[in-house]
Image (cartoon, helix red, strand yellow):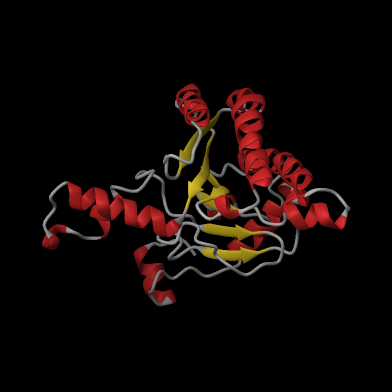
Length: 249
């Protein structure tokens, strides 16, 4: 894919995405919600390929939240099977062949089947040396839960209150070396964060697209990046200060 009107010098390093709208996509077609989740897998693969073409270094998706366990059990079981059988088995080798490093962020508590944990570890190990892009799958993830877990770990180390700062907390996140997202995308026309990367998106550019996730393709990723490149990022500074400090626009 040619970059066209996109500026290669202003590409977001990290794009995070809330993949919303699977259920509505299925309902519009008179299909069970599970078919929307199945179609969403194809959208994810195309989006990752788009990230590769745009040379986006990190691409993070919200696959399953800590709140999703409240959904009907049949749907939860299907979502787990999509992650285990499709992403961690059928698609893993294809992504590995594309040079994608796959990582997972979220709690590994009693609700997560051990078989899925094992496949997650196998996938992480298989792809750990890949360098084309990093696909982070947020599974059993919640932004508040991540902050709580990080603070608990920090307190468990015996850290003094005077030594606790943002860097100290950040070191105990699920993936400490993951950079903050430059661009946050949510599909389906909803305008919510939904407890995703609450800490990390403090200065992210938010783009909300009126497309249901199963219909999302790399062209929509380009659209979001185009919108991102039209924004002026100040990080709390004035435009003049930003330019003097050499921060990206």
